[in-house]
Structure formats: structure tokens, C-alpha cells
Image (cartoon, rainbow, N blue to C red):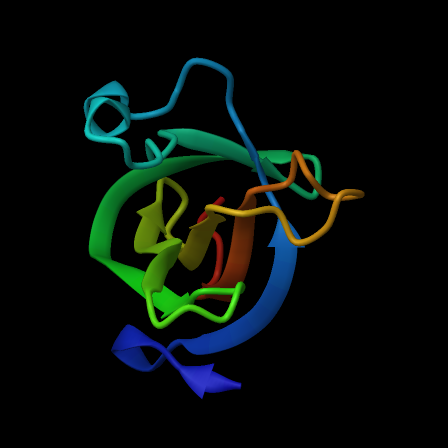
Length: 115
């Protein structure tokens, strides 16, 4: 476990999340980027994105052996409406044919939920 901001313990999740329909950032999508949803479902519970702490992109080598580099993931460190800090990401390519619809993932969770 790593330590997040304000001495919060960060827990590894690596679980899929489901964006709330119609909540994605349309402006980002017009630029060809995934639109960070303003809300998502994780473990059956809805979470609202209250703010973005940090955003970054991850590139990787071409999978067909060329020397090119491709954008693989879009990452966000967010604060939720109930006080959690979460790291979420969007995978540009599905992990497998079985998971071809799963593109949004929760990577880590830090903090304690406010009731």
C-alpha cells in the first residue's frame, strides 16, 4: 500500500467501473480523448467526480514490432463527492476480446468515505 495525499492510505483496486450514461466530458471527446465521466458505478454504488487532482497519459511501444509509440491509457487522480481520492484510467485498447467493452478502470482508492 502506498501513501496518498494528506497521509491517506492508498488501496489497490484494479476493478472495472461503469460510467453513468450521458455523464462523459463531450469537449474532451471532440478532441479525440476519452471524456472523463462526472459519475460512475463501482461495486454497485454511484460515485460523483467532485474534482480532478491530476491528469496524465501513458504511451507504450507498438505491438506489431515497429519503432512507433502509441498512446495506451489516460489517467486521472480525482476527488469524489464523498471525500475519497481515486485513481482511474481509460484503456484505449481492450485487454482481450472477452473484455472488449471494459475500458474504464479504478486503479486505487484512498481515504475514508464521508457519510
